Structures are given as structure tokens and as C-alpha cells.
Image (cartoon, rainbow, N blue to C red):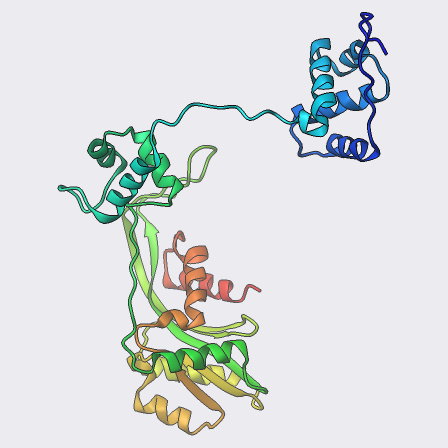
Length: 332
């Protein structure tokens, strides 16, 4: 076979598997344009079309067609892939990287509690970019810190197993309710109107605020369904908690046992609350371990309420605040 200029060219014959692969690459939407173009070139050449005609059809130079034709004849499908390029030689070896990591983890600068990119670069003689790349590669973030608290409850393991067991496998004919209160929720207004978000500019509000009172939300989360029984009160004493228990009692069908998960807060342990629960044998209380409120699932719901409704809200009265809270926990 000869190309358009009369030069003889080696015949390019595609196997069935090669043709299927090339056609598949051409049809893909998320394939590199360069690879798709090379596949089209080889498909047309495999049909016996001269290089110049292929170049005109695909809008490329004839030399480009010849290059990929030769690469394919030499290496077949592998020849269509980009060759590995040597790139820039390394300027820092493994021992130097290990030394930076060791210094980051095992020491602190003399004038600070943690390293910064600037201080580590100054101490090691490497550039800011090099330190940043090393830290990113090994997940080092000296500027960040987290806190934790260990429970000292001697029955910690037993209580966790009991509560988690309730969540995962509740008893038959029973309802598991995660109960707690979120106290001192503030109705906050801003001293100036909130400036709305615009392209390239986030929503803006004044740092100072006007306080219009507080409310306390008592909530019971049905762990199985996600349904929430909630009520707002001006105060959060045992009196209010007992009233909320009565609301739960009125809301739950009388033929179901009720397993309540709650913490050791003072209002949950008063004589009036204990007596009320003792007179109702269908109620079973499961106290969370001390310093372990995270196991109480309603706390997760409180976090969602805060993030989605409370944190950025602007309200001029507790009535408005309580209305927003009610609308949130009634939303499916």
C-alpha cells in the first residue's frame, strides 16, 4: 500500500479485539481527547484509508497520522499511550524527607507550640513548597488539634453494650427513645441587617448581636424511625422534664414498652421523676456512662438542628425561635 505521496507503507491490519478496544475508546465520553484522536487515526488506517485522507478527515497533520501509525505497528495498542517522561530530578532524598517528618512529629520550635511551614522551612533549609508537599503527602497538619475526654464510669463497657444493643436490636413490642434537653437556646438578632450572599461574596452579618431571650428544648428521638417528640419550655427543671415525660406517655401507644436512653443530669434523677417512672412498669431507663453523651443519639439530632436552623438564624423573639424549632422537628 502507498500513501498519498507515493511512499509505500506497511499494511495495518487490526485484530477483532483491537478494533473493539479502539471503538470503545472512541465512544467513551470521559477519555482523553488525545487518546480518542489516536484511536480514530488507527481505525481509519485499519480500513485502508491513506494517511493524507485520514489527516484531512480528522483535522491533523499528515505527520501526526504517520507517527501514530508507526507507533501502533511497533507496539500495537500500547504504542498509543504516552511514553513515560523522566521529569525533573529529585532535589531531596528519602533520608531528608524522613528527617523532616521526624522533626515535625518529635519536636517543637523554641518560640511556638507547633511547627508552621515557614518555621520548618527556616529550620531545615528547604523551601516552603517542599515542606508543604512533604506534609501533604504524609497527612501532617501541625496547626490542627482535637480534644477528647475519657469516661471514668466503672460500668462504661456494660452501659455502652446495653445501649448499642438497644439501638441495633430493640426488643419486640417496644420503642427506644433517646431523650435529652438542649437548654439556653438563644433568640439572637443582629445589630444590622444580614447582607445576602452574592456571586463571589458570602453572606455577611455583624459580629455583635441583640439577645431576645432563651428557650429550652426537650426532645425524644425514636431511634428506629427518626421521629422526634419535642417541646419547648422557658426553664429546664425537673418539673418541666416530668411534664415532657407525660407528653411522651400520651404519644406512645399504651401496648408498647418504652426504653428511655438518657444521661445523669440532675433533673432526670429527682424523686418526682423516679416515682413517676416506678409507677409505670412499661418504662425502662438506660443511663449513659458519665462523660459519654455522644452515645445518646438525640445529641446527633441536636447537632443537625443547630447546623441547619439555629446557628445562622436571625430572630427577634423566643416565640419566633420556638416556631422555627417546631418546624424543624416536624419536617420528615
